[in-house]
Image (cartoon, rainbow, N blue to C red):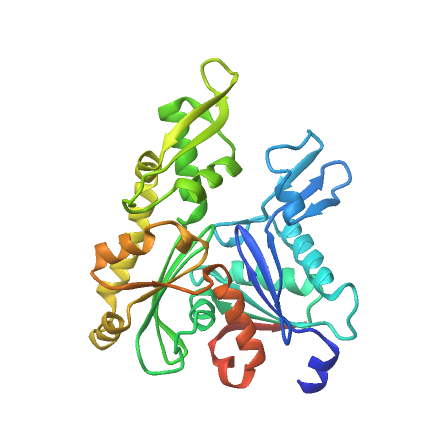
Length: 342
């Protein structure tokens, strides 16, 4: 291990539906890019990866497609995911390493064996020496600083782009968990559908996400906000600008948010009494990009009656957790769910 790690740069990767983050042992988080690849249809070669490719979403000519290789937290397009991983690994290493790196990847706890295998194969094809998988709730809890090694109940809710992971952890393991494929993407989609139905306005994926970030909220806020939204008017077929209120956007997201809240309630109902008592004492930890939605902590707290904390850096919790596993492999190695050596 000592010799290997001196010549290779071991990595922790949060392979997310919306963003991919890379942690390099000894250096910290070195890359945070959208999980998007722009491909030339004629040559099947990637033209851009990450931020550059995201700018192309909905704006490409016929021969170029901007693809998100992950859907609902799992690989939907294997070849593109492999291209993306390869690109990120080479960028982090600047093309130079003597020994292929060891990689720890955070994946949703609800994925199937076939989906786990696909992630490992993609990482091996992209140039890793050993691939280890860790369930996202465990990685997020470690990254958020929860005492997962102790015999106390910790509850974490990790809301990403494609999946929401709800888990109760104790002694480095998942006692029970639930993974629902409703998260940030579904919230954006609900906004886009609302704009079409109520305002007769067609908007793109990026605009819907922008609305969610700017004026979206899960619970009534002190000062309601408004925003001008540009899109194509369905009836006239021409560009148009409409003004929307934060109350409307909150209403539009009510259905997917209720799915997330129900998953949290179901998990709490199944939690053993001793661990439930710990959770009431310590509160619930919220991680992932979805944790940044205004008022989400207040909504969950209102629905469950338990105090909800937001992690210090919710977007980075999973990748920080994979990094800590890498750097303290002896102690935290038990949390890994699968491994494969090339």
